[in-house]
Amino acid sequence: MEFLAEYASFLAKTATLVIAILVVLSAIAGLRGKGRRKPGGQLQVTRLNEFYKDLRERLESGLLDKTQLKALRKQQAKAEKQQQKKKGKAEEKGRVFVLDFDGDIKASATESLRNEITALLTLATPQDEVVLRLESGGGLVHSYGLAASQLARIRQAGIPLTVCIDKVAASGGYMMACIGEKIVSAPFAVLGSIGVVAQLPNVNRLLKKHDIDFEVLTAGEYKRTLTVFGENTEKGREKFQEDLDITHQLFKDFVARYRPQLHIDEVATGEVWLGVAALNRKLVDELQTSDEYLSERARTANLFHLHYAERKSLQERIGMAASGTVENTVVGLWSKLGRLR
Image 1 (cartoon, helix red, strand yellow):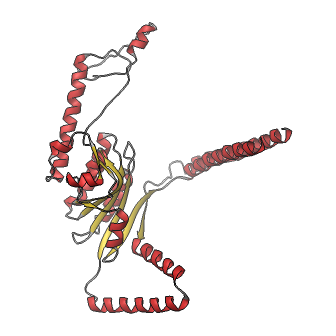
Image 2: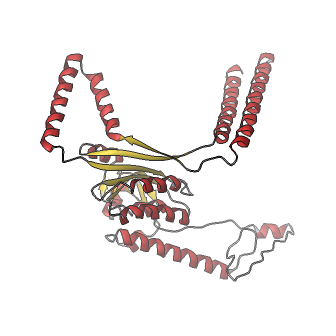
């Protein structure tokens, strides 16, 4: 036990020293970078055709012997040469721009999405295609409204938009998905939830029980409808429900605008469906994973994955390093204590 205590003390001192150094470096970086930080980030472009080609070639190298592999490479080179000669220099492969959106409740990925779309719209033409790999269970109405509006820019430019859903596109996620001219879903992806929900606790009776007064002062009859601490009224509840109904109707109208083939009142009940059932209700157009769809497109088009990465300051990077150091130290300490007991 004495060794255990000494080891724990050593780890604690080491962590303290490292954190202190990182805090000092962070402060220095903050002072030096104050007022000099450049806004924005960097657009990263990756050719996905090379990725798929590399996967195939690695598998071939692992399965075939040297003689077979050499013969295959020779055959592939000959086929590519003949294909290029047949098509001629004037004819080029189409382009597919691939974007990703992994949504949280605040649709935080919208900031990157808007920059990616702004960039591709400077070059993309109606002969190209944009593919969005979308994953989101929805969130704040105004946040997902903005994200959906960014995708609408692609449609307004006349560029084909395909939305691929492997896991979930519900509520605000489906608000985004419906803008696609084509929606491709995995068989067991979750879709729908075309509805609006709001909930909050009310502790007014608890406050009264302990003789605690809480007052809400407003200017405007409906500045506050339902509150957490105040006493809610039936009139306030009715107004709150009216606001939800208005938002729901706007949601329905938005979906119906981009997918007129839907029987909107039948699917706008707040329910969700898996991919197969969603296809029957015309919420999606095809059942495929995004991997299958993109690998097929890679045969006839050049695929470019776009990702806009926000630039992090030195201070932010040091802060992330400090956080990681603390986490690793705590985990390591508990791991050692667990083995030594």
